[in-house]
Image (cartoon, rainbow, N blue to C red; front, side):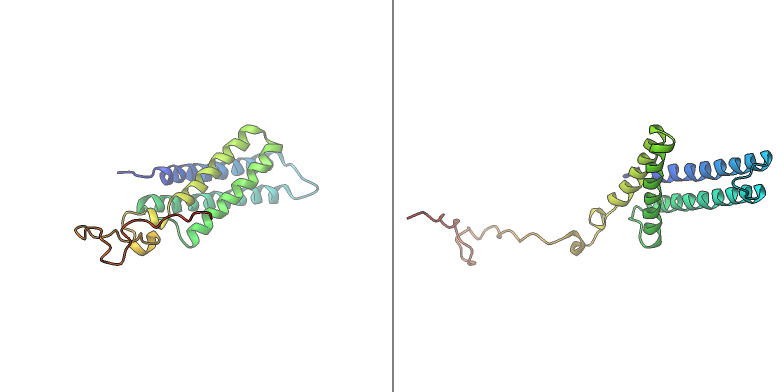
Length: 171
């Protein structure tokens, strides 16, 4: 039974985004190579290869983030250590890309970046140790004071007051 589908959704979105980023940069590298374009005197082949390399690196990074989200979904536990740092880094990248997308591409690109950012932040915030079903009692926070035992009659024999103290009055 899937109790929290957020991790599954984040994993799917990050895998798709990793594939999309890699494919887009690969396509841009092919276009630069075929048109033999030069940017400020740079070698076109070098520009093409670097575009493809950056696309593969970012695609693998987003796929690794998707793998972390998939492990979160399978284990039903919060990400920890390097996985948490990786997801926080992906959230920062999406925030920066969203800020640039607003001015350079448009509102739709900005909104897509914000949706992915919100999903990653939601994944990071919804999995806390206190909400796990098998969490230890000391991790759940301070314990509530014990209620008085039934059958004691509430007569104050254990040192507890029978009624609450009277409120102070003004002279």
